[in-house]
Image (tube, rainbow, N blue to C red; front, side, top):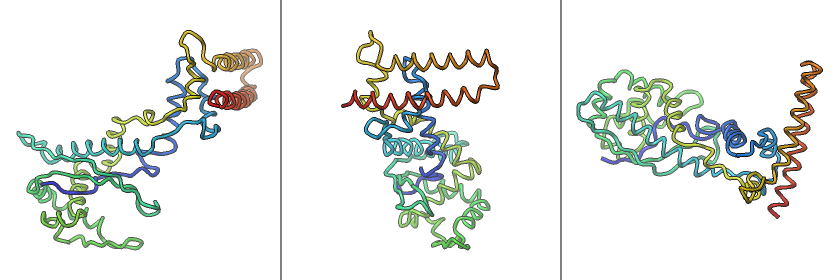
Length: 283
């Protein structure tokens, strides 16, 4: 039978395994280091990303990325539930999950994003799993649904609805808890991290970062037979970088902080020049 539930062991997108400012920076670093054929200095491009006005900077399709990750997470949980319930059966039955929508709170003080999904399960198989893991199931309910300081539960751990398929239809909290327990019990305390890693292996944040046409033109040029506008900047950066390296060879490594400071200044200056050039291209 099909039910509507919250996706088990989903951490949300607010500063979680699935997204963070560090993950966005790492994706930009991959773009800076790997995606352009003229070996444009990554330090200059990263400085550009951090300082350029929005009109000539990258955009992130965050909603598209979140939906792709949520759909991948549904697939991961589908596999996890099927494995937990049916790994020892000679005939594979399986559990099916379909993504519905991401529901985000207005504020992230006390809660985070959740994924609503449709799930098709065999109620009898779920009840058998719970009965075989009754002690762990009771502890899960006690830990999650017992009121305490700072948390008021709207359900009692002994609520019969958790074991009643008729109640699962009326209130998705019951079946959501059942499925969440099965995944957690089968994969262990790192279930959320494991599922997040599996989902992220199927989605690349880089695919949802888009550079503006003017910046693409600056980096790639219009004609493959001619150097792009960035070619002279690459030459200048490489010349100054090699000059710094030769200076260290002659004067010694004690001057490295001064050379690094000089290269930082050059990087900022070239990024500022790059912003002006891209703005003119896009004008």
